[in-house]
Amino acid sequence: MSPRKPPGSVLVVDGANVVGARPDGWWKDRAGAARRLHEELLVADVDQDVVVLVLEGQAKAGVRAGRDAHVRTVHAARDGDAAIVEEARRAVEAGSRVVVVTADRALDARVHGVGATTMSPTWLLSRL
Image (tube, rainbow, N blue to C red; front, side, top):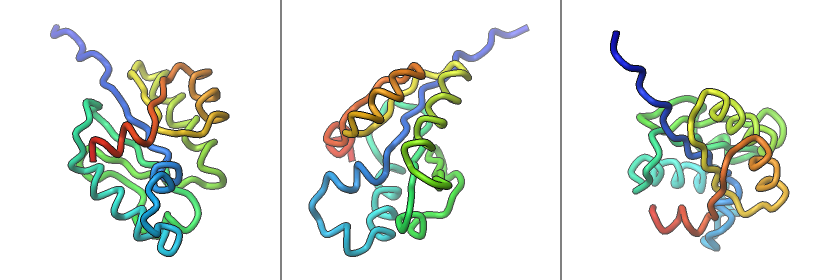
């Protein structure tokens, strides 16, 4: 019997928060901004095995829900924060090391409560 592969690591991205950290006119085309972020995440220099991009509102029109290579896009049913916390909780419970990218202080506290750590959008943007 071979040893089990240790759980991987997961990066959960607050799409609205990361897109909003760049004053590049994203508010004029939220779907386009989400699509650009998704494309950048596909080639980003991050250590995590899986990247989960959580989108809400108009941004959902820019990227279909589902998996592309190591990036999985989730469309929030209602609010993005609840979807981010749920994604982080599930990954932690599965044994993964989870990092959530957000600058939202309330969300930061919520994901720490489920066992995830956080990094800032600036941290992620420097790797795109």
